Image (tube, rainbow, N blue to C red; front, side):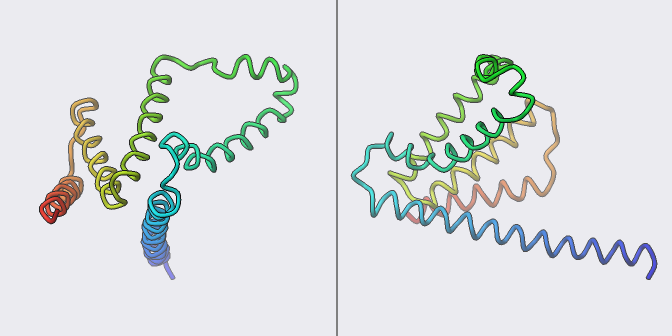
Length: 168
């Protein structure tokens, strides 16, 4: 088997694996969205929105707490001591970084509001629409050109939102 045939076989294998990974990711995302909607609306409707946000963020906070503790116990961190590590934790946080932190926090609250008062389909539409808006903003901010694939995807997103809203 020549180099070209071997490269083509590897490329087709990657295409199959990539397609399967995308399908698995889409399935797991949909499953988690439906489960989260079930838990938020059906089982635990008595909680306030801020308590619900704490419930939703628990696993990410637990994960990053483990990462933080591993970072503290690194040999390099032990040289300066725990007090120095904690005092320099926010070094390098510029106003842009704090703006991004605020945007992410507001986004988390918006997701909780959408899940509480709407449904998983509306959350998915809003995520897709945010991607389209980000792509459009990149044209003005970074002077990028939109390709045909993006325009087709944006058309499909916008038309599906319109068709869903007409059904209501």
